[in-house]
Length: 163
Image (cartoon, rainbow, N blue to C red):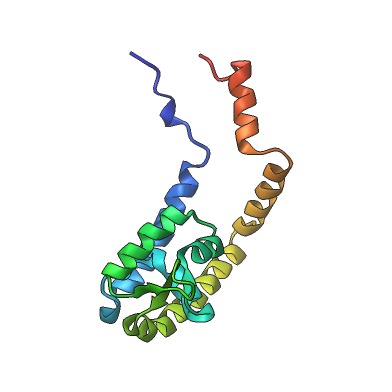
């Protein structure tokens, strides 16, 4: 039988924590009858479209730091849910994503949820012995000096992870 190395994971608890928070935010939207079918993972994009106006999928992807492909799929799902629609751009070669009336009616609640979520996270951080947001900034600085890929590749080339 092969050794099961999956029992050890430094960051799996962080993924579980993030999933728990995401699930709790989803419960807030589930409690809003008018938000039926709205996924919390769409709120960032919908709020950006409300604040900045119609955008191309590329511009929206860049704004949320996602790939064009990922945003294209998300826009398709939001279109199916009746929250956005795409229309031809000014030059005829691009498509712009626009909020629908349904989305415009919801963005005030979404903005309130976003602010309340940030306040709740700040409250949680204040109760913890150290702020997760600071730990993230510290880790980003470490990775800026030498990236994860480079570190992982070096370790694998040295054979340090061999049994």
